[in-house]
Amino acid sequence: MARALRWVSLVGLLAIAGYGGWQHRAAVNPEALRAWIARFGATGPLIYVALYAANTVTLLPPIGILSLTAGLAFGPAVGFAAIMAGAAIGTSATFLISRRLGRGFVERRLKGRLKALDGALGSKGLATVLFFRVVPLVPYEALNYAAGLSPIRFRDYALATFLGLIPGAAVAAWFGNSLTRPFSKEFLLALIALAVLIAIPTVYLKLRRRKK
Image (cartoon, rainbow, N blue to C red; front, side, top):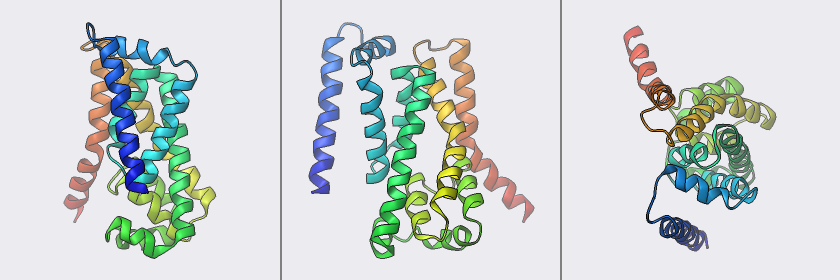
């Protein structure tokens, strides 16, 4: 059933992309894509939020690329709100699924990536989730499921996730929006901000090794 749903989702997304490309075959560019998506009206952001949440729950990649499309499709403000809404729904769902279905189910899906998180989530849950949201050393989806198996309260998990995802969501929406004006000042600044976010885990690990 899950595999069938994935194929249906994939085919649907390809169909939408193909239709949009055909409609704007003479001028396929970021501005044309935004204009095409705008034709869906208020339904567009809602569809995006649903896809984002589903992507988070199913562990389907690539959540990063999906985040970057929000600003391009809806502009920085609505794009940011859509990312945060999709993330809030998706991360909450994975947490609750993990807590309801139990450790065996999640360990099979994460394939051994759970053990290293157990101690930290058990003793300092809120701080640990917040840290790994800002410094993504642990895969986004793996942290969602692992937290559900830890003693952390859902309230603390949700708060840490919301706060920790703000920087990444803001930069992703900003960068996506700037794609309509490539090589402009806004684009270059957003690109630098995105590069800084991507570099954070590497910089952290290098600083940690030096201290040792």
